[in-house]
Length: 81
Image (cartoon, rainbow, N blue to C red; front, side, top):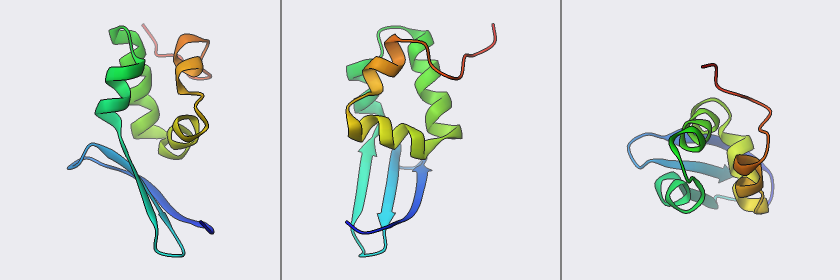
């Protein structure tokens, strides 16, 4: 994989899609990830915030295997009560 061309959330497919210059694409099924990682509504809300506001950061956490640690730890962004 060469350079990243775009990263965006596709609402129709509920996937974060990464498109590369060489024509390859990675599609992350956010529903499946959420079902595996999130234990409660607060963690799901945190994941939703990442998906909508920072899809590239979300994709990096998923691909690096750090999403569970992010959700269970102290995320940089905290939802306001």
